[in-house]
Each structure stands twice: as structure tokens, then as C-alpha cells.
Length: 415
Image (cartoon, rainbow, N blue to C red; front, side, top):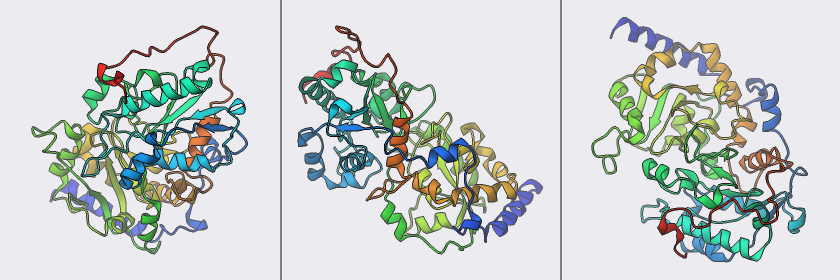
């Protein structure tokens, strides 16, 4: 072992010793976010907006879920839980004339393969069909062409409706959604599949399941860097280099034998417990920039190491990601060990105190039932901050902007 690696190991051991007693989630060991971000995180949206929920035929939502209940458990399930939340929310109005926002409950990810992955191929036709329905039966879509409507689109690349980036880019966002506000997990700067004004949200991770795996908060964090997941996807990327833009492969090739790194493709039953024993949790991009690891890291107080260039993170106006996480450029992955071991201990401890703040964890979750400050409320806060609507939202008589016949020919077929 060289001098550089030996020094890094010594620093890491010092960090592990320092971190062994500061992760207790108590008042004295937490830290509130100062300034506007902390205020935004704790905003209460009730009384600041009213939402009308369209009552669609069950084939757009309930029937799909009844056919395949697995939709409730995958990382795209936010579209279902957001619908359920709004049905009983205090912001719901049954009078569309007083609504600030209109919500169309379409479960576009609830068409699963036998292995449980969502198929996006019917999603554009399903969405078009739902929009045609509300435009025909209610007057509110046509007066704004959707500019006061929002849709939850949690696919890998949002409303581009494809799981492969090149094809998602080629498709682009469904033309009929160009004026709507999209609530989506995908977020990457200057990307075709992220339109201005979108609200980026965390993927769904099961709160109850994570709750059952909590360990005593004073458990020492004895693992310096932790990751479980794929490094290569030989089935979909046989030549390598395309999956995760090579970042995950670089993690494995550079650090598989590094004693500071506990990394593997295995997914042990102690996965959640291991994250709670770790100082840093790697959150690299996969096929898309985002994954549930980000949620898990925050909930379990493990400093997220975000490896996804130009990512737009969930609720970025409320959660101070720069203060709680570590950002590593994809090209810098080979230097990951030196980057992490060079972070001062006091900086690491402050990140842990911020992560220990219950409001930080709550903002990343979709609990059942909903709780103050959770991801549902952060979405509503994002919508409330867009009010009042500007003069460009409502169209002039006879004015039309959207092209109903735009898009790939397959999307125009009846659903």
C-alpha cells in the first residue's frame, strides 16, 4: 500500500471513529436548515391552493392496479399514492370553478413485465386518451390547454415515456403535455425530457418496510463507503460503457479491492441495516440519473454520494443537497477514495446532523397515511409556489397552441 492510500485509510479510520457516536436522532444531534430552504421544507400548503381531481373511468387507474397490485410496491408508485392522497386531502375541491390546479389520475407505469418492470409503450396512448376525455367532458383543459393541470409521470425519463435514454430523447415529451406541469422523478439539466417548471420528486421507497429495519440510532457507522447494485448490465449493454455512462463500472474496477469500500452486486437481507452502519452511500446513475438509493440514504442518515452529472434532485428548493450530500463528477470516479477521505471530519459530522433532522427524512417519503412535511406536501408546496397563474396560462378565444396530431404515429392509435 502506497503512502497516499495509507494516509487515506488513516483518515477514513479517524472519520469512522468520530462518526461512531453522533448519529443519534435526538434534538442535540440534529441541525435545522437555516434560511429560506428550512422554511420552505416546513411550509404547510393547506389553504394556499385548491385542487380538482378528475373522476376518470377505472380503466385509467383502479382497474390497472386491481389487475397487478405489484404496482404499489415499485419505485414508480408515487403516481398511485399521490392520487390516493389527493382524494382525501384538505386541498381538494369538488367545485372545479374554484380550483387552482387540475389533476388527472392516470397510472402510466402500472403495466408490468413478469419481472415487475413497467412497460412504457402504451403510456403515451393512455395519456392522450385521458386528455381527450377531459377535454371533451370538461371545459377546463381547453381554456388553458393544460397550463393549469399537473400530471405525475414517474417513468425513467418522465413524459418521454421510454426507459432507454436515446429513444426517450428521440420521442421527446408527449406533445399534449407541453403546457402542463409535470411531477416526475427524472431530472437532468438541459435535457429534452425535463421541461421548465417541472417538479422533481423522489422515487417511491416503502416507508413501512424501512421502518421495520431501523436499528438503534447510536449504532457505530463502521463502514466507510457502501453500495449494493449492478456495475454492468450485460443483458442490455453487452459491449459495456453505455450503462451508467460507465460510472458504475469504474467504481467496481477501481475499488473492488479497496478496504474502505464495501461494494457488491449482492443484495443482502441486512441491506437497510448496512446503510445505517455506513458513513457514505454511493448513489450513482444507472439507466436514468435517479434511483431509490437517494431516498434510502437520506432516511438512514448515510451521506449520499451523488454520481450523476447535471442531475436535478428532488425538491431542490427545499432540500439543501449541497450541504447534506457529496457530488462527484462521473469522470472523477477513479479518484473517489481520495475525494471522500479528504473531506474534513467536522464537515461530515455537520452533514450527518442535517440528515438526522426528521423533516429532511419526511420530505423524501410517501407515507400511508400522509404526514405533515412529507413528499405529498412538498409537491403541493411546489404547486402553491407557482400561484397565481400568469396571464399566459389562459388562452384567448379561438387561440390554440397544441398540435393534437403531433408525435410518433404509434402514439396516435386509440387506447
